[in-house]
Image (cartoon, rainbow, N blue to C red; front, side):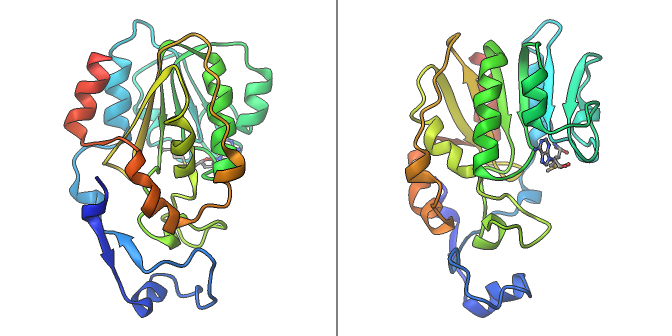
Length: 235
Ligand SMILES: C[S@@+](CC[C@H](N)C(=O)[O-])C[C@H]1O[C@@H](n2cnc3c(N)ncnc32)[C@H](O)[C@@H]1O
């Protein structure tokens, strides 16, 4: 599904994207995913709002709030936003929050530290406190270039390597999972059973690079925004 967007660009151009990247990074790759997110209608907030409508007195949690662009758009009085730096209403890391938390949620938006290890921890913790039929949304699931994916971060627009959780989520039983082609890739998890065991493939996944993403993403279900609204409404 993403293959149609692949485009080879020459090495010089890639290095222009990031002036500091003159060293050869192990992640280096001359293929990009040529999607202009500004040309695709809808963003993470639209999809989260479409899910919120399904719940009476929806309990909402956001991990990573920054300048509250999303958090302040959520039309709920009782909402929790966790961020150790900026935004939300609990100034702490997600790990500490989950250690102390006693609440359950209908919708959790995970958009904190964009590293695979942290994101999978946030998902595992979230699945424990997500109500049956609840949703988890994940941001930045489609990195478009090795620079956008690289750990450590090289530039402002950064998806990191959170895409790797998709490889484990497609093998996790008791949930539906798909990624919306909009706003840097919005992952959607629908929890269909009370107790979910996250499929652990950490050993085989942790060292994957952007070039592996280009080969492996065909295993994932990608949908356009219209299909996403239908799937969220009907699930
Ligand atoms: C991409 S921004 C969030 C944007 C916001 N969700 C939105 O949609 O507008 C990522 C945020 O995650 C926060 N963050 C980093 N590490 C975190 C952690 N361990 N727990 C929670 N938040 C974290 C950062 O401080 C930053 O503000």
